[in-house]
Amino acid sequence: MEGPIWVAGAMSGTSLDGVDAALIQTDGQRIFAFGETRYRAYSAQERAVLRAGLGQWHGQAGVADAAEVVETAHAAVLSRFAKAEMVGFHGQTLAHEPRGRGTHQAGDGQVLADVLGKPVMWDFRSADVELGGEGAPLAPFYHFACAKWIKAGAPVVFLNLGGVGNLTWVDPSAPGPETQGALMAFDTGPANAPLDDLIAARTGGARDEGGALALSGRADEAIVRPALTRPFMSRMPPKSLDRNDFSDLADLVSDLYTEDAAATLVAISAEAVAQGLQYCPSAPTRILVTGGGRHNAAMMAALAERTGCVVDPVEAVGLDGDMLEAQAFAFLAVRVARGMATSGPSTTGVSALVGGGVLSKPR
Image 1 (spheres, rainbow, N blue to C red):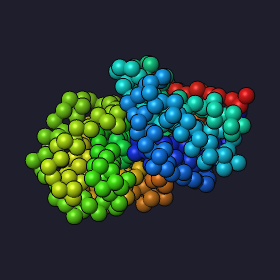
Image 2: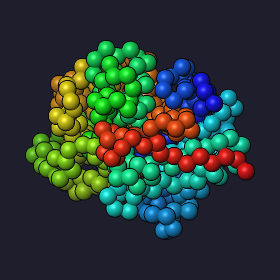
Image 3: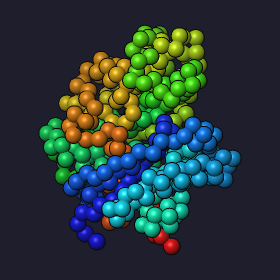
């Protein structure tokens, strides 16, 4: 099969808010068109089940229940994409330990294939980890296609602010994402996860809406830089994190008023990005922000202040920051199906280009 096809991708991130699903037309190299998008929020009960599964591995307590939540939610939203010829299914990351036990995304692609009656590409990260890679981030090859789509004329950074922050430095002059020097990608540090957990613990809310609390507080700079003096920050990329790797930040801000604690956690996340930019091959002309963190005005202001770069949401260039990750897994699904790479040494640290994914066809 050659030429562009319509494919649906779905992403359930570490913020545990819900399932993003999006349709794109692609041949795995270029974006031809964007299609409809949908979102299916997790209920409070479903989020509780997913939280109980965090940190767990195959066969451990809570994993089967988490997988059922993931499969049910994804089947509900993906069944509405009648136009899709294929599905890219990421699943829900419960544990990620690339130098240890591997990586674990809950949700069985075969279950979805049977329910949807369409081929489903899934388990995108395992092959990369098995070959010595970090298994994350996986969106960079799609970010390259996005840079081409927006006709970027100079190096640009795509910054995804989910539970964890990750950036992709793109040189749009390269012929393809596999080309040496075209990409560099890595996790920067914490993003929304510590802040969301703080808000949940202190107010019962899901997030700091719009960054209102953080904007009304003051960051404690005596906490910010010491919080980032840990081995991960000085490791050369590529490198990746688990959602809970910075869970100790809660203790560091435990004595602060909620507003100041929120401002401090925002400052830590922005400072982590600023420190990460030193590893990029050249300074970017612009940082384009995707993921839920771009809705946090305090986070966006802190990023601009600490990086010294122009910082914009990806909507400024006509992209959809809520759906970029979902679109990425649609794009990667086609690449895997057609024998193309989905990650490489400069994005995950894997020793050679690898195309990771398992294809399940409806039975």
